Image (cartoon, rainbow, N blue to C red; front, side, top):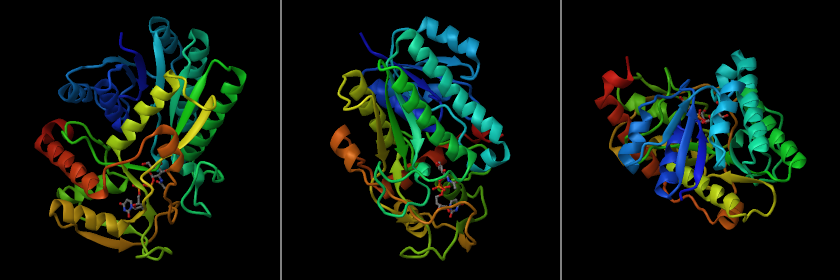
Length: 347
Ligand code: UD1
């Protein structure tokens, strides 16, 4: 019998790629998503790649009655991967209560059900944003957590605390927080990928939309950072590598290989790239020239961050394999797929 994994936010960017990897590794997946930032036809993309369309329940995880109904019917879930959350930094500053309610209430509801129905394992989507601008690079899981720059970042910190406290109170439960660095790229089939609503905030969707002629030019935020070429440095990780780490994390919990009830892992490549290096990698791997200009720093941006991935490499036996050129080429292939299906995606 296949083991059943609940993926919340499973039609989203990282959730859909993780669902593919779970199915390819023999798991049965059931998805909960309210489709607030994704589309139901992602399920068709997942089916195209894996041959399996996962079971799908559309509701909001803040709706306690629906959550209860769902778990009553799915008591055989072996582990939960909790992606569902609001994730736009700027919007979180405008609408903090929306972020606190969505991101905290949903986790609290899930943890309550895990206790009630004896579902022991949860992997949580955290972020390197919890480190702020670290004093020492690369950052390890022991690097200090700095006061959050935004309500979004704060929800990630608080959710980690909610997990830690809940696990203290119930030793039947296990959790792994996965702190993502900058997930980019798309599945090689280019039938699933990142689908930003409106004008993208993140670098790679902005690059691919500029290359596709949908945006006039890319603004490079800041040229006076203390980095090799003055632009900010991030640890970009291919979303498929990231997705694979979730499968390993779930297997670790199900097979009781954890060293502690609560563990935290950095998920990055361990390599930092400047914005200009990313642009060059995009141009050389796709052959498409990018129209860009240097502008002022973006408020709230940090100068540089990249991961020490030793703990994930050694303990999870996982390592990111795909390089920056592969990330860019796959993001571009996905953007072309979107353009070919314009009437469906851009109305
Ligand atoms: C952002 C969030 C982070 C969140 C992550 C999710 C901020 C301040 N941080 O990370 O909390 O976890 O997204 O994916 O929003 N850049 C440009 N031009 C652009 C867009 C970006 O130069 O049009 C630069 C940024 O200044 C940054 C780098 O590209 O140096 C990456 O930016 P982005 O993709 O937005 O990610 P983060 O800011 O690292």
